[in-house]
Image (cartoon, rainbow, N blue to C red):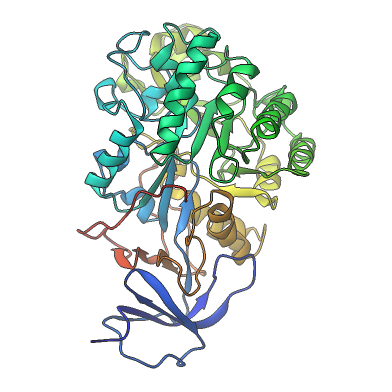
Length: 485
Ligand SMILES: [Zn+2]
C-alpha cells in the first residue's frame, strides 16, 4: 500500500495565508493533506506523483458569491468553476435562493419574482424545505463543494401575496420560522437583495427581525445593498445595523460604486466599510470587472455608459446587442426598448476602473464571481474571475502580490464564512487544491466571447480527487454539501 494517494513535488506552495509561497512537497491521503515538507523530504511511495516544478499550488478557490443554486443540480460537472480552480461555491446570494421556495403554492402566484428568474425556470424551484434542497445537492453530487445561504426574497415570495410591500408581523413570524428551520438543516446564513423591487419595500425592521434567527458564531448576513449608487453609505450603515442587532458577521456583496455620478467614491465607501468593521466582523466581496450584470432593470437604464443586452425572452435575437443599438433600430427610447425586451438580462458598464482596483485591493475584500450560469451570453466573470485576479491584476498590473490574490480567494473567505478545514494547505486540511502556472494563468473569456475556459490552470483536486486535468472535467464528482459546524 502506498503511503500517499497523491504527492505533488517541488511546487511553490501558496498556502492560503497572506504570506509568500515556499517550495515544497504536498502529500494527500483519504481526501486530506497529510504532509507539507521541504522538497524531497517526504519518505514513502505515492499512488500518483505530480511534478510541480515551475508551478504553484494553492488551496482550491472559494467562490463566495454565486448564483449556482440550481446549476449544481442541473449541470453538476461545473466546468465554468473547475476550469478556474474553484472548488467551493457559496450559493443563495442577493436574497435569491433555490430553497426554501414554494412558487406554485405561494400566495404571490405561479411565477418566481425578478430576479429569482436568474436562477432557473419556475418549475426548477422544487425544494419547499431547505432540507429538500440539501438532499438534492447531495444526490446530484456536484463536482464542487456547496454551501448555501437562504434568500430573504425567497422567504417573501413564500409568505407575501405581493413582494412590493412590507411584511406584516404575522408574515415576519412565518418567514422567521422558515429561516430557523433552514438554518437548523445546514444553511450558512441569510442573504438580502434590498435593491431589487422584490425586496426594496422591506423596511429595515423586517430584516432586523429575520436576522435575530442567526447564530452569531455560525451564520452570516450577506447583503446586496439597498443602494449601490448615490445612497451607498446609508445602505452600508443599514447593513452594519443588522450586524450589530443580530451579532452576525456582515458580508457586503459585490461592493462597487455604481453609476457615473458615483465614480471616484471608493475611498469614502471603503472608509465607511472600515468604520463598520471596527468592533464587528465585516467584510465584502468583489468581482474583477468594471461592469455589472443582472436582469435588465428599468431603474438602471441610462445613456451614461453602454448597456449590453444578454438575453430577452420575447426577443432572443437581440441578445449580444447594445441597448442603444436596439432602441435606434426600433426608433424608440432606451427605456422604451428596455420595456419591450422584458424579461431580459443585461451587462452594465457602470463602474470606474480605479474604483474597482481600490476595492479589490482592500484587505477586507474577498473574491466572488457573481457569475450567472443560466445566461446564454454571460458576463465573462462566470468563466474568468479567479484567473483574472491572479493573472491580470496580480501578475500583470501588480495590484498586489500573488499570495495576496490567493489569500483573497482561499484563507480569507474560509475564515470569514466559517468553512472549517478549507482554504488552507496544511496538515489535516481537506485536499481541495489547484495547480497553476503563475507565469501564464489568465482569463480568456471576454465580453465578446464569454464562454471560454481560463489558461494556465493545470489541475484541480476536490476532496483529494482529481476533478479537472487542465483540459477536461473528470467523470467522477466529489463535491460535498458544507453545513456550518
Ligand atoms: Zn447581487
